[in-house]
Length: 468
Image 1 (cartoon, helix red, strand yellow):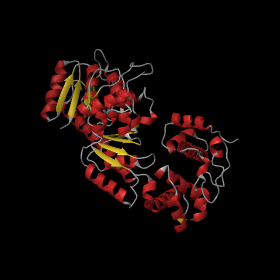
Image 2: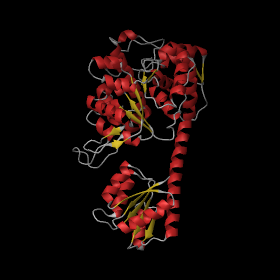
Image 3: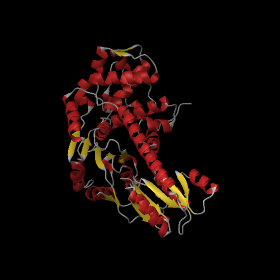
Image 4: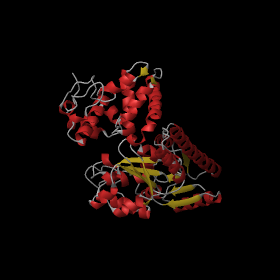
């Protein structure tokens, strides 16, 4: 049953419209002013709004503009006793579905209401179809190892339920892909999947990002903002790197999970939300709890189902299948014939440590495609798979540590500890992507899936500079 809101400061008009619409089996609410009407739109949700233009406190056109900003797909039918062509044109430009003069003609009113509701249904169906198309493009979880088979089986069992899921694993191992499939195989697949990288958002902004804020709640809050929980209503929210969330934000997330309610920063009104939460982290949350960095009660709320994604080094048997898939995908992107990978190359790829996991493997395959001939050989992998291979010259302190490398392999003695090696690998990866994108920082940040400000910090950290 469609829900319709009537906003009009004339009680007689509201009563007449309500009687007509309820007789047609619509569920109807009414209010006598635009300000309260906007609150009802935000907190209750409607399929259609009938709104008077000339009202006290807030003009109908203001109501239309404000509602369109937060609910762009909500159809508005504007009504007025002072109807002119100019008024109708203005309402249409602001996004109104139609304009009706008072007193409304019964037949025209009902036809317009049906058409507006039909359009709203079409908009919703279009969004669902777009999501289905996006779903078909989601990368498969590739692998035949026992660990991957178990993950796939768990997704099939858990996805149709409402259970919260905690996905753990090292960076680049594929936690986000697991979250996407949990959503797409769920009963919420037609609703949004909203992703939040908790590690990429400054601690002072994480609450605003998750729960939204009211205008004027802090210095830079020049307008109201709808948070990620509200955006994910009736869908799924994916909280990536949950272990990096601030204690105050943890407390609010816990409350949202317990009560299915949130409060915007600077606001007092409680807002109902219906979301499924999937969280992921590369940290050991039990150790974080012991260190006082993570709430135990939140951990138990999130960890209803636990899915651990093993590092690629622990399932090296999947490397050939992944490599072939990446090779075909990247060659198609470059619009070149698909290159072959020799058996010897597969064996060398399987033996590498893969500290960057799936993400690192894809980047290595892309590099091999660029630097190899029609067939990627064992010699190609030994020469080009590691950034310290013979084709690279040391540029800075980090690269100098690997200068003892050779085309036949990688000399790990050039690094004093694991963190130095990780920093070096990260630096080479960022430098390679920057050069590939001609030092377009925005495109590179999008390519490697981090915020632009975070990428600038990495460039400063490693002292990377564009070659003259």
